[in-house]
Image 1 (cartoon, one colour):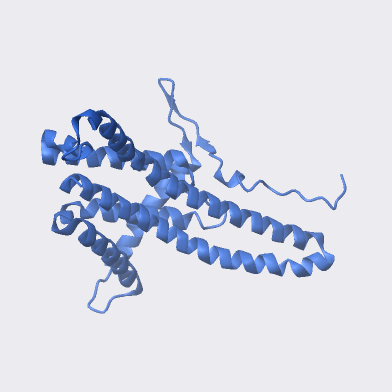
Image 2 (cartoon, one colour; image 1 turned 60 degrees about the horizontal axis):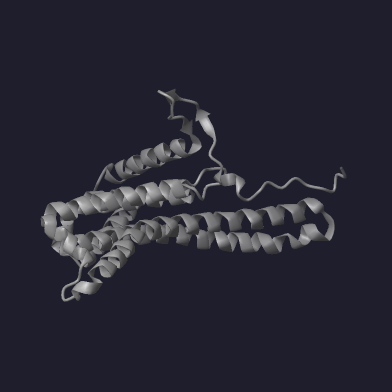
Length: 254
């Protein structure tokens, strides 16, 4: 093969699950993978970052304190606007969710790292866990009256089965919209970055006039990285916001 050909990795290779430590108990695969490693890393960095913001806490806030307080204020306003005073009880969970997703998305932007939220199995598992928990809260709060959520008042008797079916489907679809939105945005963004980066590297490696024009895709790559960082923060916010809205729906039976 000619030396003018260059090996370019697939843009989807960055999403591959790689087993780091094979483990199996009773035939169940519980191996440690790169996804597991980066979830643990995200958790560790989140705790470490929070501890930095509390270190030498003073009346004049440090940069760490300002950043933490900004995220705290954003989450607090989100809860206040969507849940009101009753949302104070759920603040620790919602703040932890917001912070964890933020770090998952931002760590995934580091070269040669792994984006946990780019896998549908993670986002769907997280959304399903939240969905189950929200329904448990609704049943504990309202008892059997919770199921009136699927049957609006004043519905004629002969279309009750149809209305219940439609309401149940539209209610259940929340799990998929919550998980697919985060997964699709992170996957598509990272794939595009990989494609543009590979294109710029191929032009640079080709030499000659192409090496000069590689600055065009390189400049586009820098701009897209800034956009992807904004999307990473926005998607963590949207996921948390929808969690607050869905929680409010079951508490107030909207």
